[in-house]
Length: 249
Image 1 (cartoon, rainbow, N blue to C red):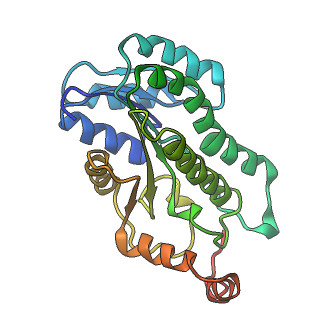
Image 2 (image 1 turned 60 degrees about the vertical axis):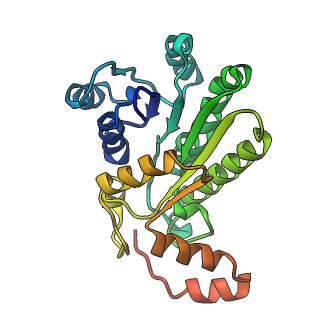
């Protein structure tokens, strides 16, 4: 990653800030974006290395994404990472449509806005690297994941579409699928979260994965592979097994 130009969206806390430090330690030059300017500036002030910058934006506003991109596209970022995320634990008995719309807008529609802004320049240059941070919650329907799981499943689909359509274009597309990571978002959960990892561990795995040719960077492997295996089961068996999982929100 030495001297790579990286635009990291969702960099103010959690996985995003940990990833910013990991990439900076590897020599990358970072542009950080998130909605909260004060938190961004705090991360920026503590980053090792030089050549970093911060541009606050709200991913729910296409114009704000375009405005920041206009400042960056004269020296195109080598890597663009979409790590913005919203999460509210919710089951079908307590469906809050406003929270669902927020999760879909941030987690999925924001990624589409970014892709629509960045890809024309990458296609014209015939090179680039776009990374979308999803979740293992997008693999299949899970208890109390109403809205969040759907948005991440859509993000998985988007990443797969991009990988297929951009094959041979010189543009690399990757999907990151973390399990449970100790952040402000997972602090909202009241159920047991197996194989929890710290943001620094997640950042290390993501940074290593960015250097690979793998489409998906998923971790922790014991958890993600177990969910992938569940995803292969027929519906009747899957529903029977998963109905034993109890979550409260």
